[in-house]
Image (cartoon, rainbow, N blue to C red; front, side, top):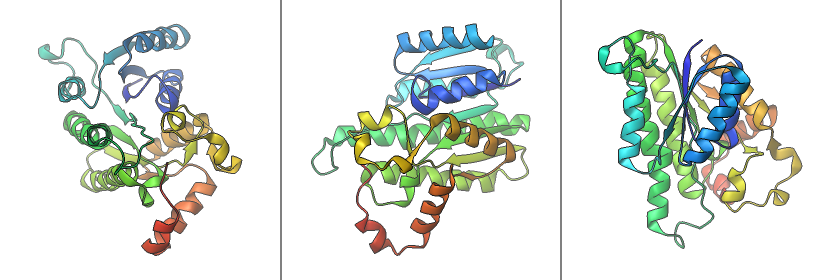
Length: 258
């Protein structure tokens, strides 16, 4: 039984990660912006799974909030300054950021907040977690990206491309340490994320949608196996392979991920 910290833990994939990890008897540290929702989810998980659940209210576009989560991740355990807290053995960088505006038409402040959540926070939290994980010789980081990382879809796709490449680099650096890094690259998943991004589900073919339960189960299996790039479903494995071999001018004709 270990401890997992999940960002964006009260909805979508983050909530599914919380339930599956709790069912597998992992203690949890849940991170999200809505304190009431955090408390509600934590109570449900404690009652249903009988695990310990900590909550950290944090907006990952706010540097002080990210620093507070990083301090929790840096806990090694067994030291007086750790105040009895368990070390985190699995970090799930899941928090997303949705916007329906184009880059040129949208607000710069919104774009920068998206970069802070999807890139800066991922880097800072990964650094904090990996420091103590490599010291203890065990642990895993799971960063949630997207198949959009292989497209030309503005800030969102660019941020996910960074996360994908960053995680691959971590995996190389972590060889032989007992710690692993995995990047999850799903396609469209039935969650509230797409509605917040202004994507109407009916405009996307039914075959393109994945179930959150399956995506999370596949991702956790890949983490246990030490897989670096986790792409759920045969259809998105095929789509990713095609996007990697197509000339970039052809990829750019596909359009934006919105």
